[in-house]
Length: 411
Image 1 (cartoon, rainbow, N blue to C red):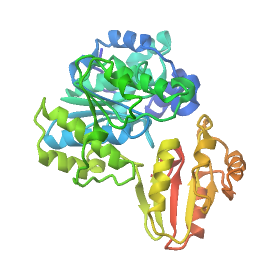
Image 2 (tube, rainbow, N blue to C red):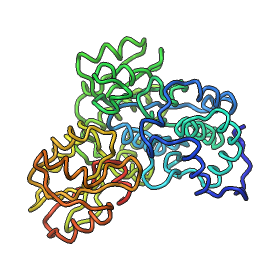
Image 3 (cartoon, one colour):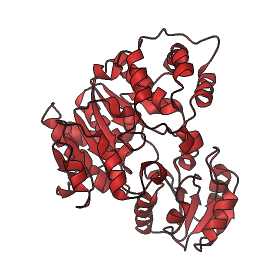
Image 4 (cartoon, rainbow, N blue to C red):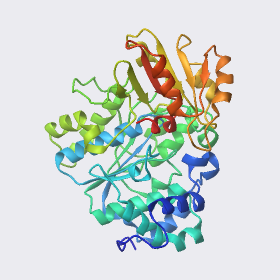
């Protein structure tokens, strides 16, 4: 079932196919928690119908609250630098759906997406899978067809009940745990860690990036070899990704590579090249990404409490006359926790992304006043960014973020 005829349907083109998916399999990215379907029943049934494509390649499974995208992309880059053919499955996408499914950095073709959905329509309308369940199976089928050597698979949400958790990887990675999606994963770090630790399989080694002492027994109880990356010494290897969080991510990446090197050839040259060329090798965007200079414009997708703390720390390390913040959020995040961390001496440009989940710029502006964050509201990200640029001098800094969806409209 994973060998699809290559043609564009007379019935649906690529954009119509995506619209069909968003209607028939509502996406968390678009509508939030109502799209979440915990449990593996649907994806297991899909897997059976598509002849278990995930068994055709070796995989690396990456979970965590923050950093899993950077870690996934960098591991893929290092494997590519070694000469392996590498699949990469991540979410959400920033600009186009095809970014979610890549082989050696190249997004899946529009043609493949159309063909897959055409041939899966009967299953879609019978099983009514979630958007993520279906796209996970699309990725697995594509990687099988492309005959990848390895696929780096990023968890969508949580781990234990995530659609990707039907794989048995050669290595599992859990970057860290902090508060995010608490309504779905639990309102304590212990509950969230339990869900993330659900990707750990007996006999499969696991790297945990950051783990306080009280959480470590949750990871070690699974019967797998566990390496805690934060216990490792700092590495002096240069890393293309320069955000504050990447110091922790680099430790996690190198610990993962160390375990992989015990199984497969990965040279030190490949490690160095992959660390230095993540963006060009994989197409990663939105991680402390410099969009312009004079004034300096930075975009970052960090959007929860832990991520915002690191962003604010990084911003404070910069030199500027005025800090200007183009900020928008989605309506199911802990907005108050994020706003309480933002600098009060910045000028704010409150906005909203063009998605149903977006909190309106007016409402965000009103809530922000409670935290002495003052600025105007703008109906679109582009208008907010343009206003910030028009008011900025060359020695100002403009930051764009608060949500993946805000960043998606500027990178």
